[in-house]
Amino acid sequence: MHSLAFRALDRHVVDGRADDPALVTAEGSWSFAQLLHESASLAGGLRELGVVAGTPLDIAVTVERPRVVSVLAVVRLGAEPDSGARYRIGGEPLTVTTPDESFDYDLVLRAGRVDPATAPARDAEGYADRLLEHYGDLLEPLIGGRPLA
View 1: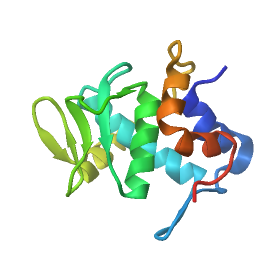
View 2: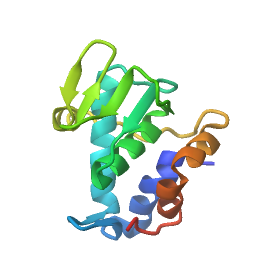
View 3: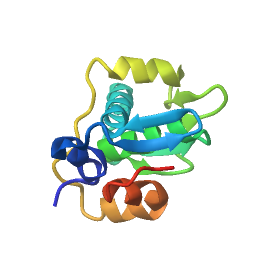
View 4: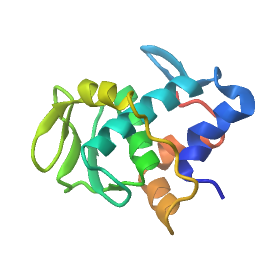
């Protein structure tokens, strides 16, 4: 079975649904391709800061678009949700915090555009179940090809 990240976004782009809506908010609509681009870019930036598969990361984001992008970036990297983690995305203004320093969220996103993260071929044992338990409200509609609204 393909990885959770692939099933949530990449599959829809590959299947010809790149321009279909994936995220609809008061700010407007993003296609599967746009959401894939943003989440892969953030994942690339997080990877440059040391986040890899298994890294505990706290997502404390309440604004819808950045929350969705952050969760999908974490899934793409295989990182683990952990509210007490030393790596954190959150705050006002939105920042990415590592064990050593903090960075503006948009800076990390832009930096990741240089080398966006690809979806892993497969997830580690039990990973998809753990992430669906934490973020099923966000991941299950996308896996099913339905937009988040």
